[in-house]
Amino acid sequence: MKPGYSSVERVVLASQSWSTAARGIEPLVIREEMRAAVAELRRTPTRRGQAPDTHAREALVLELLYGLDGGGARTFAEVGRIVGCGHERARQLCNGALWELAKLCDLRRSRW
Image (cartoon, rainbow, N blue to C red):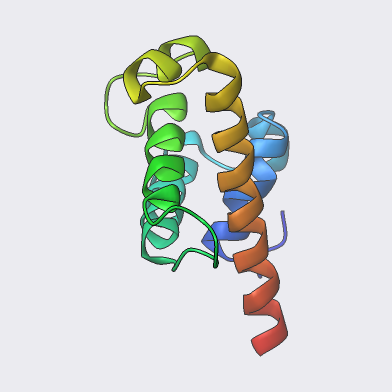
């Protein structure tokens, strides 16, 4: 992986392919960068028409799914039970969170 990638970009790339060893990224580094990216997602304002807690829910889903809360990685069904939705909605929230993180990457690149 090129050293010029930001932490958010590395998280998005890692989420697309969990073969991090092939990319030369240490799993602990990914975990810390993912925590930073999730924190940034929580700070991102929601779009017009979105529920005010959307990013907080998306961040929680990422934390639970990838085990960033210290409890180990969980399935979409387990995440859905904890968050109070079905496994399909948990998957949708995860995809929404990754989409938002990818948009943050695009915004950063356009500012450079």
